[in-house]
Image (tube, rainbow, N blue to C red):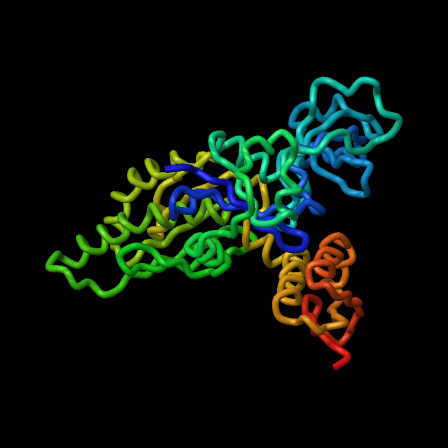
Length: 364
């Protein structure tokens, strides 16, 4: 049973599916023009000491700032001081980059703050986790993005995703998850947490209702926790099991804790809340899939995919302000879309449209 890292290209984005037979093991979006910054190393400058927050806001020399926790070490630093830092958490959920201080400064010392080195790409991270997986590209465009160090692992030729894998990846964009036993779960991200509500079909077995509901929840949870990993849902997560009395939910804790061990981020199950919700926390490092898809850049790339697939005669895209800004910030994606469709188009701001809306127009 071979494991593959399957790459499929679209303007501005490569989707990576890790598969074994027809099972989706892991998933990531790779946007070469918009890395999330995790692992990046900077020679940076302390812009503002924030004693009340136990840290400092750091000028990275790129027009962007990050926060460096310093705890009791705040008093040993001064504003304007330069130091080497590394990004440990991407900007997400309305919060900026999180940094850590590096003990060894670069040599020679740079003249001014700026980027020293990039962190690993999503492809590099997954290739490290699945060290024996072969890489499969769907096109020359995706193959060209595979770095030289990983080229020996690439299978010859170009192969599209199998239909079942493509369907499973497309389903990750939906808030409703189909689970074993006819169950479903609805996933609702909020600024503070991820809320997940499980629903079960009517009981049709000869068991008591509570026994049947417990078995249905227990059997559906592995698939739900795998969806949490595939979508990279992070931070505080609350799961409401379906139709199960609060006193019965305690019995789900040990199975949940055991299931979480397979996740590389090692999420922690904290227990059952007073309302009977399973409470867990998963390290917030990279942006979640819903955040990537629904942010301005994600909506802009979705527009380009739609133009490429459904609007071959469009000569202009009228765009809302935020969507236009996202497209202008990724000119390579726009150029790739034009090249693949074989016809150029122009971008035009339409103040009458909602910020993330767009309308194709043609001369026909």
